[in-house]
Image (cartoon, rainbow, N blue to C red; front, side, top):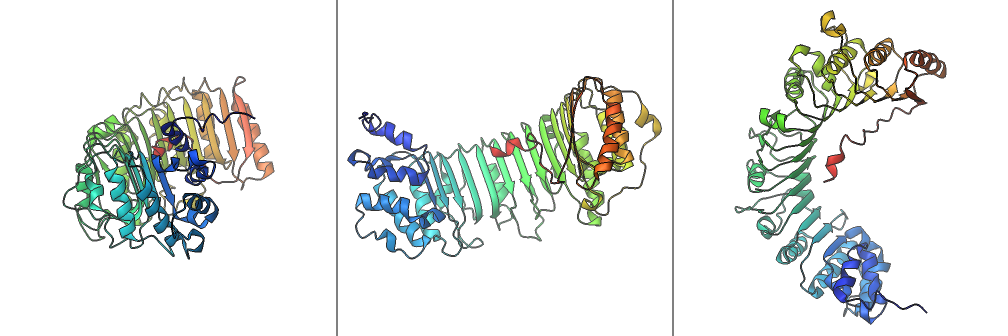
Length: 475
């Protein structure tokens, strides 16, 4: 019989090992032997998921092994009772050691855990120098206040808040906070969100998704003036007439929604950027075009750029000589319609990317963009047909190819000017017939260089973002 070496390790080491296990599995180790009975009380990573409390086996065995008096775990009526009783008892038995990560998933919307209980758990985590905190959901999103202790936590380095209302107290300060994620958060006070940002002096990563920060008729803009910020993502931030960004050290930025007003210093600092802009109302078009073109024209130092949905159309509506030369750009990913003026826009853009190495294009169906400026020509022949080379372009990937004359013209331009292309991946739209694919593929193969590896396939038109397009959103 082999010796149980793990059980003979010092308790701090065993506790550290358990930190790598899912919470339920870590708890179940308490039934292994007396030596393991109380190891869970020194865990530094605590994750409480309300749905998991409906899985009575893991937590029930644990409660029985500890002889929690009158716990009656198997007799609780719903997940709220399981969570309230279980978490309160776990925290009351915790050995008082520091907490690295603390998560509460209040995700049973029929029987949610009460705000006072959630606040009590937050206060406990703050008192034990929590470094990473994630709170998902409170039962009354629009009128519940989180514990005031949270907003002056001096140990917190990462904070994630989801599906809740955020009412800030008078005193706010996160001296060590580097990562802040807000998802579906409601903040009713006009100045609250700007106050929050201004009191995070070392904030480096900020993600805002589906949030309504201000009342719909307010005029206060969303101001992201954070000098230390390095990564920013804004996804579906609709309830602002204006968003201002001034972060001179920003390196990575992703925006899905309205084009913000980005300071010149911030645009020059960006190295990786992704923009997805869709116009839903005709009265927005002029302001969208102005804002979008201003942003793209100011990205002088980007190495990777993603321009999705409305972005190429915005370029078709302005004089292309306004665009700079993107001498540092190496990877470019685009959405475009298979029509002449958007092909022209792409060609003009490519003329300004002398060091491009990777080009990815997703061809959208006409029905995916309504009320677009699709029938006009915008540039003079000398701008379109001036000689240029793509000496560094090695990888070309085109998805949802529809086999139009405009697309063929773009491909011909790429092969005439890209003498270093090593690999080409083409995936046709499912709307293209087999005969259409065969005929168009024959024309493509006549363009391709002998040394170019060509891969052609039929697709399903479901767009899959380039793996690099949103890689920084996982911070």
